[in-house]
Image 1: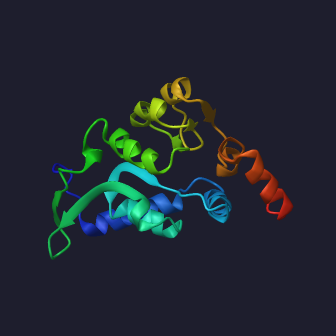
Image 2 (image 1 turned 180 degrees about the vertical axis):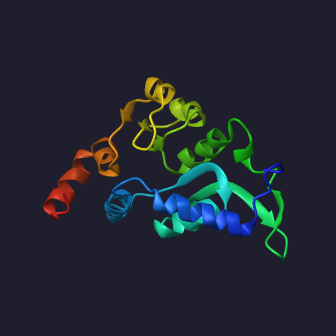
Length: 173
């Protein structure tokens, strides 16, 4: 980050690029999960405010967003990043997951990158997602791997039988 030195404007522009390229049906998938009172988190080694802007668009609680904070000067130019953030370390996501699984013992992680693999033994289920880009290493190390572009394909791997029944009863599925 100190080499690239992204400005605040560039971080916001990057968020728009992410929003323009969201996985198909992610909004409806998250609405369904929210209707079941599922806690949804974003754990990303990406930069904040970019990730927070995407999370805000997806109605994910601010406290449930983990990314690397950037600091900007008054004119919006890059100042620095939070070197104390867990997410700047190789196993940063693992540190965060260990804290979260104390509160949420049934934890399903959907990941698309190699830095997600270290979480495998610390969560209930690891679902590799290749809807945007195939990753053979993630596929080899995930409990399940989805290459379907629609996020709705994840629901059968996330929901319990009781939750499926509730959604069917309420004509949501």
